[in-house]
Length: 185
Length: 261
Image (cartoon, rainbow over all chains, first blue to last red; front, side, top):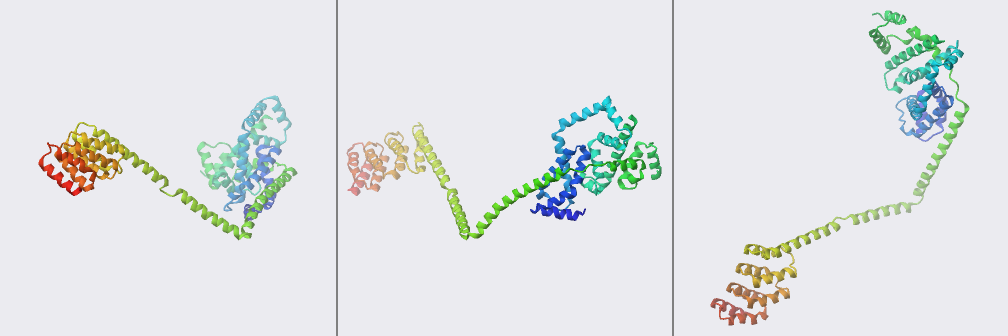
């Protein structure tokens, strides 16, 4: 995953060679999909959002100056696409979360947890779901292939050290949620 | 506190708020790496091992379809631009036509926007209004009782570029009927520039017979000489016949008649 070459490709796209966007798509479709999937756990939605990101890259390609890493620029767009989506569906989303929280207390949820008994990964996924968006995002970003703390700092506009602390805090919260869920099982 | 102690304390969950902050700082500046905090190691590993499904073929299909559509759109606008560019290069006459068109446009706009047209008209309107106002003021002042006001009115006529019939009539009326000699003399002077108007001339000739003041009579006689008005002789003779006319005036008028005849 050579970043210089990413930038060179994107510069070509900017100057009218749109076919080169196909190469960038091949490089990043899985990573972007992973990002959206870990945030939403919705395959269809994640695919739509990846699609939106690339269409936006196409639309705003003139804004790519080539002075920063393409990956960082792309994730700025990806985060905007995500925020736009959640803003649009905010009402709906809260409903779902409310319902889901209700479920936690009732038998349905208990049964769901029961079903996941012993399956640590599913429990972990559930714990991840219960984190707030910011923590879920930083963990998701840190998990992405080839993503360094420095890159995440560029994406989130903070220092590398601050990213480390955020990851540290998010991991702690994730662990707490996980233990909490485990205790209920 | 030693870093190791801090980490040990962290593991046992006995960190105070202050120590937590210290740990945060250590993490931030890299003194403590996340790997050293072993309790998080497993959750981190588990989290990173969470399987992420692969995006479906749909994603790729849709992307390439969209890309193709965008490319075609791009090409269309490119073609139109190329068409213009080719037209430009192939037809030098078009370039000339364009230049000539631009020049014509410039000249036309310059002509339309030239200064003065509108402004001059406005200025003319304005000065016409001003002289109209002066005329009105003069006519009003002439009716005043105070002789000095009437004098002022008569003097105002010199500021009028072109006296209207109304003004000259008013002046002639003043000349014949004003009770103040000074006003009448001033009026006579004011009328002199308009003596070329037949009506004014007529009025002046008629005025000779109506004047009683010797000063005005003499001034009129002199003016008639200056104007070379022979028709005034008849009226001047009438003044001579009047018994009340003082001898100095008679002498003067006689001289004038001689010159005129």
